[in-house]
Length: 595
Image (cartoon, rainbow, N blue to C red; front, side, top):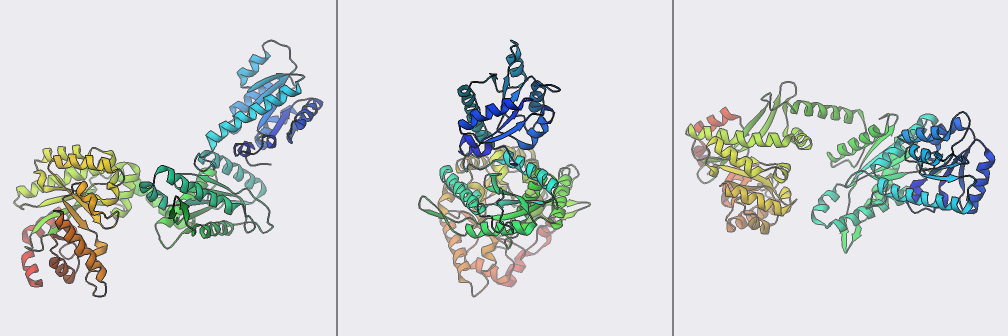
């Protein structure tokens, strides 16, 4: 038995005569005559059923490409079978050509109303019969290609993949074997799509899928007896693939398949003179150990690949209890995050920004913290991605801007002085929310002079949609706020776009600062010195973040860095502690003691 209707073969340009044709008639001789006609036309695959009561279950089991159905039969009529087929989600789209010797004038109309695809009177003319069969199969092939296959790769899409996976699991339950799913994430494709044209990106995906298919044609190490199995890759996302292994002995079989694909990925993909290297990540799950149905099994394989992405040392991960617990914890955090704002669990901490020339606190960066009664202090690296994926980032981001503006306004009223606050804006906010409008409203509500607000954006998020970035930045600057580029040097690192985007400040990423006090590492010092010098020529203020040692501070002072931020002066502080720090900490004395 095929685990899926043979139309998939047709849709992939296999000859129509390979289609499976099922016939249901209580008179076997009628079916044998029709089979002779169709064999003369080149068709070879037939299923004959002369017991109408068994027809429906046989249909669900065999999944033919087309059904030839007699209407007038004892015990159960063709109308009954036709209605049952159309009501069944699994086989409801099967083309049904009705054949009958009925002379009743309304028979044809009744059959069509019940869902018949076509109608032929008995005895059927051989030429007309073969023509109707061919036209029906051709139409079905086109429909299946559009509905079930990815246009870029020609691979089964998610809908068809899940359908095949479900059938494989049903077969595995009957036969007592295992089913494996490998989820493949080609993460670099997401980055390439930002720089390559859509045409080139599709070419890369197409070649990647060809490599997967080529690997999966060799089944000699999947089964010990070298039997061929239907390894079916399918596109499940913009840069993800999944592979179905309908019969495996254990997870090790799936690991061996993944290893073959991993080895093949080391060779560069050549596209229009460019060599593109993909580093795929593999997640593996098996039935029945990890899941009991198709959707769950695919989700578990996807979870395993997501887990692998978090650890650069691992590129192939089996689903496990550890991953299950991590997912359960993630679901729990997301549930609590939905009520975090209403329960006043979100707070802003502030890390001072220091002028190295005077020792004065000239500003601070607002950093979001989440303190939950049950979970405790949840790291931003855990809850910020959850907020972005769930859409909560819009509500939370708006609150952060308003809260930061409100707090600085209060501090200024208390006499803290001319200090600004920097607020990070997420990529989702920047691209999908009216950030300029939110900022304007917050400034008005708090009565804060816009010169005391700095909006921080990252390099990578700016380049997702440069034209929109320019538009948003212009609106923000129109309201009088400053714009800072965060984590400079970790993304696209081009000084040319700094002028185009009209930035006011750049922050050197901490990864460059951490090594500048290492006498054996001259490269970091050269890079930091060059960034500061070039930024100053462009009229930009420079902030160095992640400063922790006397030597790092001294070197940055030597390079005329404008602002210092890091644990050397202070960790991020809650409101009251920041107030005490600003009013009571003698920063100038500390600076002089280091001179």
